[in-house]
Amino acid sequence: MTVKLQDFWASHESDYVNGFHGDVTKALLINLADRVTESDETDTIFTSVYRSASIQERLLKKFSFKEKSSLNKLYAKEFSSNPIRNHFNIWYTAENIRPPLEMDFDAFLSFDLDRYDGSNFYLPLWFCRLGPTIDAANDMQYSLTKKRKIGNPRTLNFCIVASNPEQIRNYFISRLKNYTEVSIYGKLGTPVKNKNSTLQNYNFNICFENDLYPGYVTEKAVEAYMSGCIPVWRGDDAGEFLNNEAIINVTGLSVADAIERVINVSADSNLVQYMREQPLLKKTIPIETIISDLRNIYQSR
Image 1 (cartoon, rainbow, N blue to C red):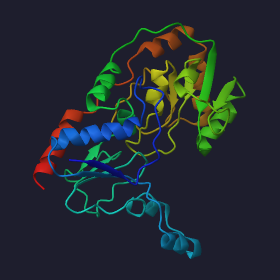
Image 2 (cartoon, helix red, strand yellow):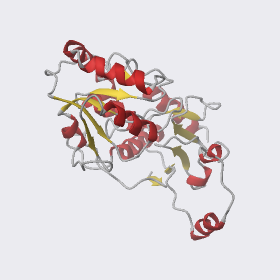
Image 3 (cartoon, one colour):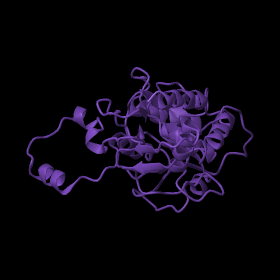
């Protein structure tokens, strides 16, 4: 059995998985396929949402005057190749894109909490960045449900690592800078070689999600926490995985109220220390159940 990844991003290493040199998410998906198929002879294809458009498609888009609605752009058919016959086809997204349910995939791994009659499984990016194998990621997520002992608060307070100029986040930072210093890293600021080591100098990491959609929770808050920061987070954790005692969740607050909340927390050293020691997760992704259900789909093909 072989596992193929099509329409995926260029490989990149994580700053949070020691001793592993490779793309953690891709390695985890390959290991997931091994667990599901139990090394059976049928090949597995993971299809994602980074398909390169053909020359014809690019020309059609270039000369088309009709705007596609934002609703249509949420759906992934135009971003993903078709399933391949006589393979076990799993669609996977690390982006806030809806599963292409009209396409003939055997299963979908997405940010959507709806099971869609049993074909879709909620597998957020934060879990897929925890380790290169199911066992490693599972062990790490369980550790995030426990309190931790951590050193004293750092001397530097606020930072952000960002490449996407998301408007609400940018406005929040501009307002926060009226009250305190904010270090900006990434494509929008100072380049970083290692995100983890950079964040280890700060008490707070501003890590808003790029979109608000139920269940869309990426690696941002998790990696901030793993660096010892308190995540200042805005997103829609509809699955209720994140512990609000370990993060400053500004979702639903006005920018003024969010700024006030952040400033008040940062001024209380005892509260800062308390929050940094709390578990990040209230519960875990039921990955063994997902594997079992995917195995049932595989065997019933």
